[in-house]
Image 1 (cartoon, rainbow, N blue to C red):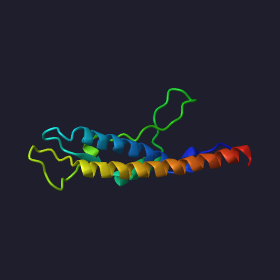
Image 2: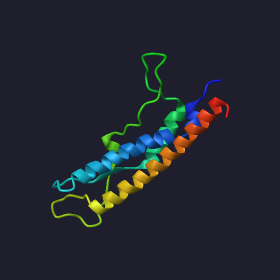
Image 3: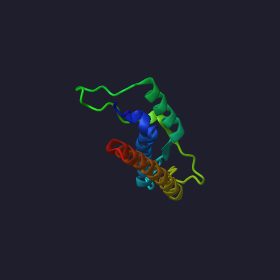
Image 4: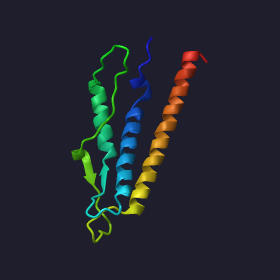
Length: 134
């Protein structure tokens, strides 16, 4: 009997991809903290996870060129899906990046990423135990 990784891992693989993408967006904000007129961006994690879950349930898969390839694919977002962050104290030069807010969001995202990773690691250990018959 084949193991269905989609069923075994749940939404955590999608959550890891989205969290990694969110980290990139927040890091870009921090990198542009001194760029005039730069607008801080973020993505709605819950909405993107819901979309990824709906696509997973509908069976939308990546096109593969060989039957041995693993189907899947990244949960990529478009520029339209990025939201603008409202600053608490707008800057004179039009930049909306607030370093303390971005650092807090980055750490929050990092902790959530680590939690999902730890959960997936436990799932894989459980699957390995089942395969070995332990």
